[in-house]
Amino acid sequence: MTLLNQRITAGRSLSLRAVALAICTLATGAAQAQASAQAAQKQAEDFWYVQGSLGNLKSSHSALGVKLSDTVQVSGNSFFDQGRTGSIVLGRQTIHQEQWNQEIPGRWELEAWQGSAKRSSVRVGVLSAKPGDTVKARALMANFMGRIAESDEKGQNRLPLWRTWFGVGLGWGTVEYPSLTLSNCNCLRAAESDGDMVVQAKLAVERYVAQDTAVFVQAARIWFPGASYGSGPYPRTQYGDWGLTTYSVGVRVGFR
Image 1: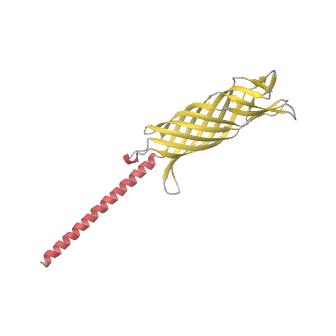
Image 2: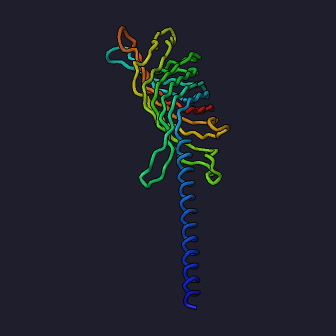
Image 3: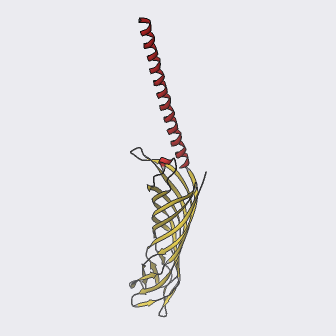
């Protein structure tokens, strides 16, 4: 009887060890599978990309001043119709870690931007004109974009189909203004900014249409430096900073 009890006890001990070993094996396999899935997802979030976009430009007005002599200066405004914009971006998406240990994707970008808008009217003092000419702007900017929202497809082991990004950028830009005659007065000389700091803030919503391809809509606000014709004979013209709002659509293609 004692021998039988010993065998039963030994059998139970072996069964418990087998169950424990099976649980450990399953837990280890699950942990390895989760780690492998996380590594694969992290790798999927790390890539280079190019993107292009076209859109509309809106700006209500910008200030200007005309210096007629050392002591006389007249202020005014330029008013604009809706314009056009286009940009090309080379970027890199990587995983960034927040302070609460949550991994989020972020993007570093180099963006070449250009846009133009027609001047619908110009007013300087009591003088006014409707020139219909074109003001052009160009910029080269370095941007950082951070993901602020996304759809939830991670339970299906897929990257999110929808994502929302917000970013800021700094760079260098110029603005070109054509000359304009007001009532036989060549008061507004052609001017181009020497190149100064450009600031940008933008919000984008994208939707993946393939593994490495997404389409997006974007709204941005860009501030350009002023321009001046500041030497030579009077009158001399000073154009103020130009703030633009843009709405665009585009395509982004990733490569590894």
